[in-house]
Length: 267
Image (cartoon, rainbow, N blue to C red):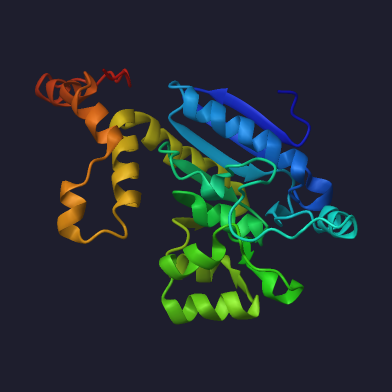
C-alpha cells in the first residue's frame, strides 16, 4: 500500500506506526483509517513482528480523533451518522474493535489524545505518556458519542463514577491524573519518552512471543467471565504455545544457564 497518512516501519521485531497528519493534529480521515487497516492486517500476518508502537507525528498531538471537517462534509452530503464500532466504515475492523489482535500494542502519547485518539489509547495494552499529554472524550459537547469504544472501555478501566464524570462532561484529563488512575503505565518528560518506550519494547521482544500472545488473549477474553469459567475456557493462542518448541525452550535455557532462543513457531 502507498501510505500518505501513516508511516509504517518494521525493525528488530518492532513495528512503528505513526499517524502522520501533524498539520491537523493527526486527525483521522477515511484514508487514514484505510491505511491503518492494511497495517493491522500486516501486523497480524507477519510473525516477525512481536510488538507495535503507535504514535502521532509532530509535537502537538497523538491524534485528536475523527476529522470533523470531513465528517461535516459527509453530513452535508446526507450520509447517516454511525454509532458503535467501525462496521460498514472505512478501515473496518479498526484497532478499537479489532478484538483478535493478540500482539501487544504500546501507545506513545505526546500532546492531545482526544476523542478517537483517547479511544485508541484505551485499546492499547501499554501506554507511555509525556508530561504534556492530555486525554479526553469531548463527543458529548459535539452532539456525538464515543462510539469507538470509549463509552465501553472507560468505565472498565476507571472507577465508574470517575469514568461517568469524564464521559458526560467531556472534561480533559492531564497525564498525572491518567497515571494516578492507572490509565497509563509511565509518564516521563518528552526528552525521555522514546527511551522509555524503547525500554518497554525491549522487554516485550525478549519475552517468549507465543507466551505474550497467549497471555494477552487469555487476559482480555476472560475479563467478563466468572473465575471458574476463565480457568476452563479455550484460548487458541495458549493451545499453540503449549504445542510449540518455545514451550520447552525457556525451561531448557534456564537449566543450561543461557539465554533462550525463541522461534515463535507453533504446530
